[in-house]
Image (cartoon, rainbow, N blue to C red; front, side, top):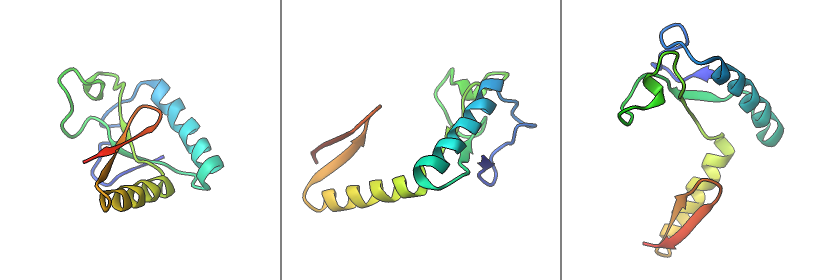
Length: 101
């Protein structure tokens, strides 16, 4: 995985070893499902997160990753087209929720 420009790297924000393992799994899945072999870390210990966020633990136990480009494009197009007919898309844990605006 790569770090978005300006995001503290692992030297600045030491991650839990499980995050390192998770990154490898994510990259493998990106390659399998989207033909995209490298994910992007968009936040480690930077930015604003909830009080008690695992972004701030040492070792760090939380980080944010970007959706794959094709998935983001699908979401953007879906949201744009549904907004035109008065609906909105809400991303839930394992599904999209579509409702009137």
